[in-house]
Amino acid sequence: MPPLYVVQQNSKLRIRNRRLQVETENGATEILASVPLSQVDQVVLFGNIGLTTPAIDSLLAQNCEVVFLTTRGEYRGRLVGSLTPHVPLRRAQYTRLGEPDFVLEMAKGFVGAKFQHQRALLMRHNRDRPNPEIDSVLAQIKQASEALPRKTTLSSLMGLEGSTTAAYFRGLRQLFDPAWGFKDRNRRPPRDPVNVLLSFGYTLLTQLASSAIQTVGLDPYAGFLHEVAYNRPALGLDLLEEFRPAVDGIVLWCCNSRQLTPQDFTPGPAERPVILSETGQRRFLQAFEQRLDQKFTHPIRDMQFPLRQCLVEQARQIAGCIQNGTPIYRGMGFR
Image (cartoon, rainbow, N blue to C red):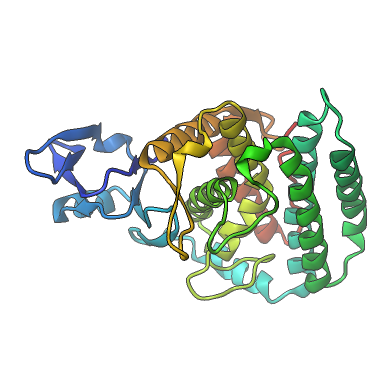
């Protein structure tokens, strides 16, 4: 089920007759949304949103996590219930982290899947009007994919991933109207509307990836490609890598179809130079959810699943690799 997103500032979540209700806190009470509690798997709150104690208790009781983001979509924290009882699997996960060859091969799998999906997105949009710059980038991604098996250290792998992704964004920018001012990938803070949307989408997908990792019983903070660091969902970020181009495609569609326009963004202070309007947030979230509901054939299960379920299936694959000791991660192979 899709998460419940709440962007209305100063609103509050309450429990009314086993329904999760979003109400305004300004003067007269207005009900903004009312959803049966049984139909909520995750709640994502943007900015100044309140939660009553009964709401917190009810959400924890049914193991429904609450994700707290800033108004700009930056991660603040999560409210989660008890850990899943998968001690043997997590013990195996921590053991594999101490096996350099296993770590490297898993990391190669994540990066290879990302390269494959980056190339697929550019090829799909370059068919009708071939662009020489995109052709050059496609050739570079192909070369990087061929060089991947020869990498013998994580640092060299990360170097290849970084240079290839920089080239990918040089190709991606060719697909945007110059009015968007998108020249390269930048963040902390993002300095143009496209980068604001990319960061927003990646943050949302990171939370879904981390939830998928927890669903199958793994520790989202113990990853292979990304360095283990305090409060950093390293394995969630590992899983995220191959799905990043899905966010890129959402952003591209929103901008080129005029679901969003440059007028949905306003200048802000130095720490937040570009601000997406609340209305723009809602439209982007709608496009994001539509994409996650789109079905794809999973290469291992050979069944069609919504994209959000594919995250869980890929997390199951990671768990299988850990349990079997075979670090062969297979990407979705989007077309």
